[in-house]
Image 1 (cartoon, rainbow, N blue to C red):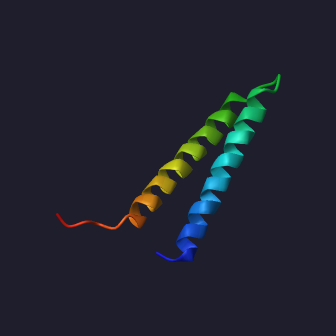
Image 2: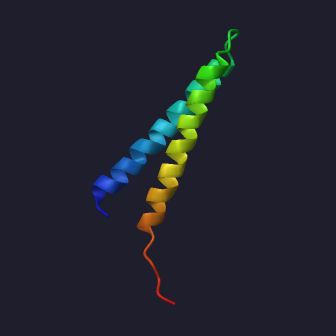
Length: 64
């Protein structure tokens, strides 16, 4: 796992934070687009799952 892997995780974390900010901004709008918010939340969750999977690959297996 090289720097590319770590860079990808960092980029995903930034995208996750950007989606969070977008969801908050849309939610505070008077004309809330529930479908768009739902799609953003779904994308945010998918990114979070991907980050978790990638980070777990970075942890070395320990033989018992």
